[in-house]
Image 1: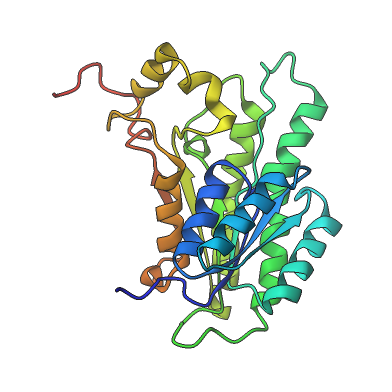
Image 2: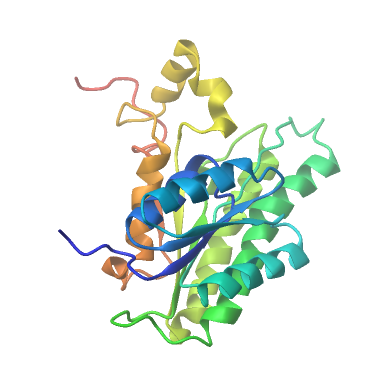
Length: 268
């Protein structure tokens, strides 16, 4: 049996109770990590995942926090460290959409998306760095900590009708790179994952009908919509020492969606 890639590590995943976050929590646990599963209001799915991971021999806790609120984020880290003793991996995954065309987009819609998607990543990364700087690496690990920022193909692809969301993801790109440059000397690695079209609740209205799914696939050269597990596998690699020399990089996991515009023909 191969050695598990995250054996003994302690991880915190924001927005961990559903979608990409949930798949990442499960993948981390399978690879030997203890996992703090963040949720916002409904603890039920996170608590169910804690029981699921425990039944498989792993360890997890559910931690409530609104990542747009500074005191919530600080308390979330304090809770995780009180249980696990340290945080080796932080995944800033929590994200929302509040869609509207620009003429009808309200300030509340703008602030909600920027607050969760961008400010939430800043707060999560900041609190992780504050703690990782002062801890020794795990045995046989070169890094004191790893931070993953969940971005999107829309950090590079404009998205009319979604300017708040696209702006938040564009901001994540330089947030991640600037943080990576600043904290790499402390042996903290910061990277990002940019998913393409993934089957999650945030875009269920598009992929849940045959017509919607077909329209999405037309934007994907690889010819299929992604699953949350596709992102989770990438997250495991970036959080492991297998990627130790990867710093300040965005890994696009998108079936080629950023190879835009798509060709009007596809080879069979």
